[in-house]
Length: 88
Image (cartoon, rainbow, N blue to C red; front, side, top):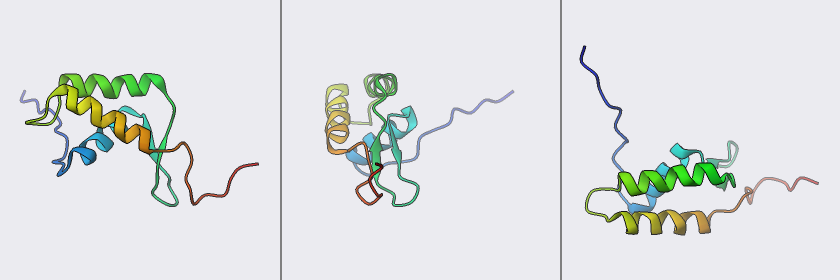
């Protein structure tokens, strides 16, 4: 039986790759109403994302640079959507 490995979609930028990896690992999610990325604050999901970056960085990028980009993206994402009303 012929088996296919699912490939990630082609990403044009390193930031786009990092966002895709963080979403795949469950470390971030998208606000369903507004589309903003939100940090889920899940340390296990973040570790999965860093493991993906170590094991399978984008072509031509070192694993150290890939991990640094993941950190930069995580640092730029908040834990709430700026357009959603604040829960009280």
